[in-house]
Image 1 (cartoon, one colour):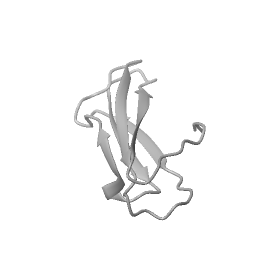
Image 2 (cartoon, one colour):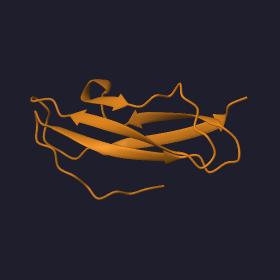
Image 3 (cartoon, one colour):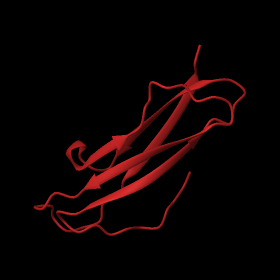
Image 4 (tube, one colour):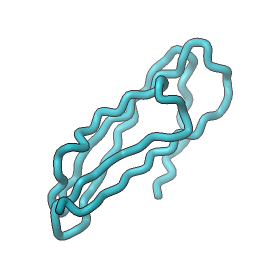
Length: 88
């Protein structure tokens, strides 16, 4: 698990969070990323979950978070969950 430092985003503003995934295994695998803690309308994920990750390959994704202009000020914990499975 990773615990990056907190970041502030003002209502109506956008931030981009880079994500790196690695396949530590010996075979190709499928990989997926899911986001929790914020509404689906708050983010856009750039990641090709259809492409296989080969052994020791690192892949990149970008999480674009846009806080709605009418959002209530507060703390929101964004959860990023990555999973990988056999390509067979």
